Image (cartoon, rainbow, N blue to C red):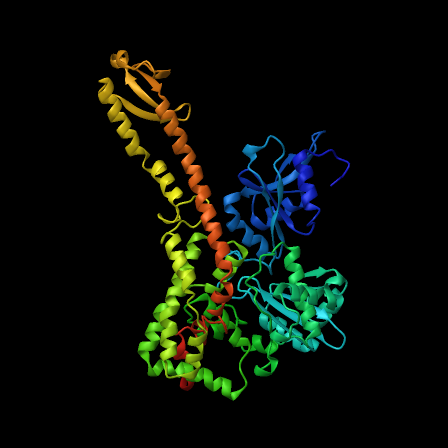
Length: 572
């Protein structure tokens, strides 16, 4: 675009914001629409199949390409942009247009990339959504993987061949590497990954280490077992730097980083995985091994089963321990039934906890968190009582977080709306002020009927009725045959063919109360909900413990109960 062209104020605002993320499609909020302009509009219209049009861009009748869609359809269109391999910058209005006569303030509220998203419509429920980073060190290569939607953070280092196997096993949706090293990356791995290049200072040991220690609030990485992985920790630090770049700074659910234990697993390259058709088939209409055996109940179980497929155990003791757990189900069908019944209630606990951490959790998901914690209790008890050491250890690790469960039950309605912007999700009895406002707002009809009956009796006007319109609010309507009975203090506001409409001081005061109450109710509910979410973040380590070893250990250690028959030693 010619910078010498005099642009409209809004288009200048767009260009200023766009310049900060030139490689991303900028979704620019304008009223009830997200709009794209210039080359973004051309790309968006092709990817989304929406109409490409023109808009005014200043004086001299200059026009600019434009394409847009309703803001409430974001969950429909955003996944298509991200899955096409595009980075998307979401630019929202930062103030209510009604409160200003100037150009509305706008800013980037989220930068969504293929490797960094917590949006349910973008994520696959039974697949991890890993972001990876690769660091080319001296003598070895470092790699790190993070799934921001679950908080799982892993690192390793080794030869190019080893890192190549890890990249294909974890199948990251996006890979970061140092700017200027594309040739080295594609020469050792492949060009088929979606990649992003970052500045060289990001991949320095000092910068990466400072980022990791700052996030985990520690003075060393020894406690995580990765202190000696110099190249691996550089890659991990680059991932945290990228989260800051994309404005994903609320990451309290990332509570640890683990080393990939290479010696515990059989190393399989991409050709082996493809030839054995473990995850996908080479023939159209075929069925992979994963499709055959995946009878998992929860998304968490599905994701771990997929992981186990490409990282098979090779130590006999670990294999026997896993099979002993499976065998226990055949010996104790009552145990299997109990676990299966409660696993179905748990849902995707991992991703709900992650949404709590980033402050993007809905009231309905908070209730699901409560339901999950309630369902863990009988599972935990059954495991503790099981005649199996592995199950007993799982039971010890599970935490039901009773404070979390009980507070959610006290404050959030059992069947809340999906979104919090409409209110109606905080229980009665949580805050006295809220209860009073609800009585004013929602019991208004009874109150108005009382006024109507009282005034009808006082004036002797039997046909008196109270109504409402958007012009002057609440009014009393009196038919002409009774207008001589109207009290002098009533104020006439409208004359109809057969009647007159009046307002009174009492009606105006009530109107102010009821209209103000609805706004105050939403403000109070939002305040209570925000305080609850902030409080919940303090318990993330507790709820995360419910998932230690990728439980809810059961949904995966058991292969989700439903698939144990297919994993029985005699039939596997």
